[in-house]
Image (cartoon, rainbow, N blue to C red):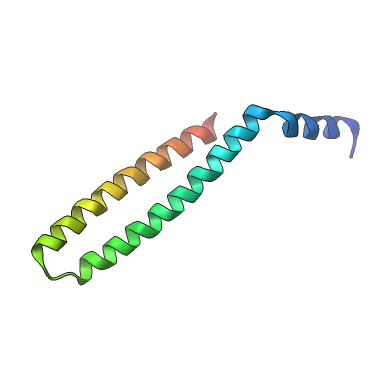
Length: 82
């Protein structure tokens, strides 16, 4: 590699804030993947459930997971822009 590219690579490695932001972004992506799995699981349980009370509880929980996932996606997009 040429000197400029090596210096740029070194600066990126030593950049504590950038590393912290990447770590935060990676953690957020992992959390969003887990929430997506939870959302799919709740949808399947909701479709299979016959009891009205349990359906209502599952529906409420599904709405909460969707809202959290939406907020997470918005936060991730905000990190991508900056």
